[in-house]
Structure formats: structure tokens, C-alpha cells
Length: 75
Image 1 (cartoon, one colour):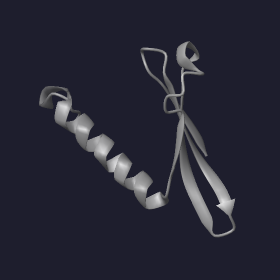
Image 2 (cartoon, rainbow, N blue to C red):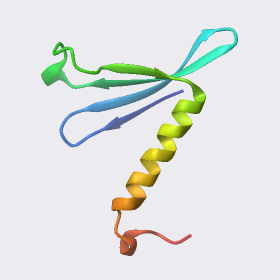
Image 3 (cartoon, rainbow, N blue to C red):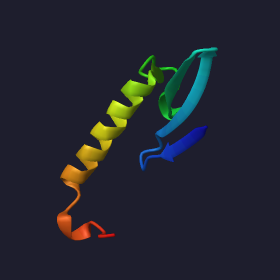
């Protein structure tokens, strides 16, 4: 599984599932931007499934906190 998100500033965040060992899977986040490709800044991290879920929940909570209630769509 791979998903890619393109930010307005040119940053691209890719999410990959990686099978390291028979019993170990991780989620790998990769950040790329041609303007600072070799700067030594964060370019990837690996997360356990639980860490990836916690990050997802934190991102959703942050997005919900800054999105005006009037723009939320009711289902």
C-alpha cells in the first residue's frame, strides 16, 4: 500500500507499508522536496502499526480543531 500527499509548498509525503520480517510490518513515512533533498533534514521514519494509528488519530484531532465548524460536512 502506498499513498502520497502533495503539500502546497512542494513537500511530498509518502506513506508505505513495509514487510521487514515474516512477523513484523511497519509503516514508513517519507518526506521529499527537491529544494532540500540533501540537507540532512528528516526524510523518513518507520512506525509500528500502533504508532501509525496514534499518529493518524493525532492528525485527525488537529485537523478537526482548526477546521471551522461551519465547513464541516454532516453525514
